[in-house]
Amino acid sequence: MRKPSTIVYISDLLNGTYIEDEKCLVTLVGERIYRCRILGTVIDKREYDESRYGFIVLEDSSGIIRAKFFDNVYDKIKNINIGDIVEIIGRPRKRDEEIYVATEIVRIINDINYELLRELELCIKYYKLGKSIEEKPRELKVEDLKTKVLNAIEMLDEGEGADFYDILNETKIDEEKLEEIINELLTDGEIYMPKINKFKKI
Image (cartoon, rainbow, N blue to C red; front, side, top):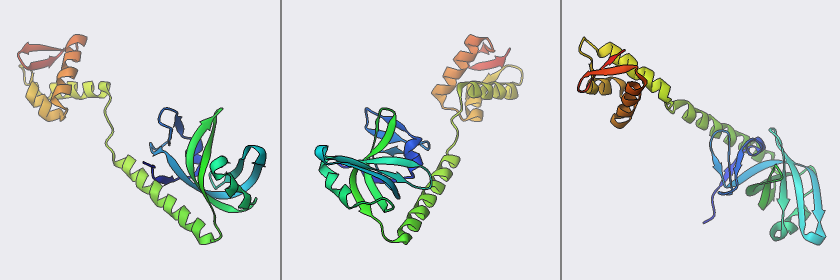
């Protein structure tokens, strides 16, 4: 099944990480790009009829990339000229440290409003992505969790130690994870167990 194409800036591709096994590119914000849509101005063009291969060099406000035309789409490069604004739909690929796009579909854009619309689409997309990342709760590291548990033990201990389930309720840590953290603290010698399921800081 063909993957849907994703609108991106050229820089999203250039700064992404290509995963060869999956034939996809992961952007800096974590999007997995199997097929991309880029819009830009053609600043160079090369054709090699004997091998039915060619490429255009495409520039947008963020960067420059090559879009390659292989045998199955080679004839489409004939109608493209330097200075044209084109939209490329294709697959991000990497070879010899170069990120490029293997072209599937190409359209010459004659309406300047299309460029403005794409810029607006990208602005909305990255605003939403930014909000999503901003609102996603940060996963605490193990050391942060240990500190949280130690602070809870100290606060809950009224003399005989802090009860396990009181610590669980206070920290809101998953029960299995809390057991793991407490065992590590016991091993590290930072806490001890004066009674079953009671814990005190050393």
